Image 1 (cartoon, one colour):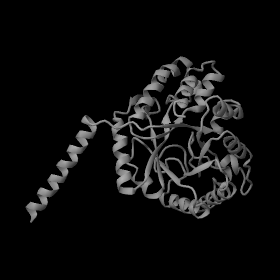
Image 2 (cartoon, one colour):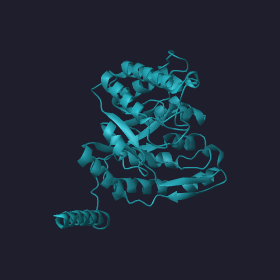
Image 3 (cartoon, helix red, strand yellow):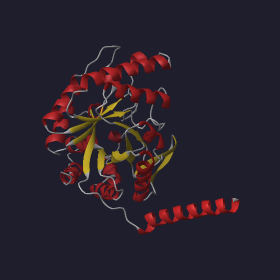
Image 4 (cartoon, helix red, strand yellow):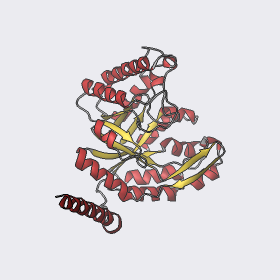
Length: 337
């Protein structure tokens, strides 16, 4: 009996290895038809770069003709003081998206993306964690109630890479993320909830267990920080098929769709990029790199991508008179319509 069990285990392991080998080295991943290319947009990042964020947002809709936006919101912008909410800028962004026929993934919570990742209002900083979390749930509730009838919103995203310890955040709490998702569902059961995770440093199991849709990132060339004075660039050595295999596993085991909510389309710098020479920026991320990253993405088998870097494209075009990346993005996005 023991021999039979061992043989069965070895046989299953051999079959698995053969399947992995065939998928990585023999069979290709079929490229999806009608691939969607959307963008991430952060009002805060536009302001940080000294740009007219409203003009930039309209140019994204009207010049790039983007039809899918993942909207990065800031808790500290909307609720700067306890129970004092200012949704006017977000109202405007949603109204413009609706009038231009664009759909929105609305990112909710504390860790919503762009440095320092967690955007917390000053009034919670000296509160104990449980009171901070209570305040955050209050903010989420206020947001959902305000926008649950907004036609342009097609999905909520609960936090941004909440399992990935990156950025300046007061805490990480998986059990609280579950509470956030439960609250969103209780207030709006009509839309799916996306939970995102690192594309390269996770197998996405936790995200799949909590969210309705798994959102993943895809970065190619990143700065590996070793010490304050030392680091180097690496290109992740993963095949695009590795993303496909993980997504297939999530589909089979969890019955959840996987989409890409953050496709690298700007350079990753060791320092604030506005302080770096433009020539260096162009060297690290060129239009040719952009095309190469998009080609890589197409071979993952995914059908939905949201570019990360829109604000940088606009800054290069408006501030540095270099529209090359912007124009390349226009060409790629137009191919998805």
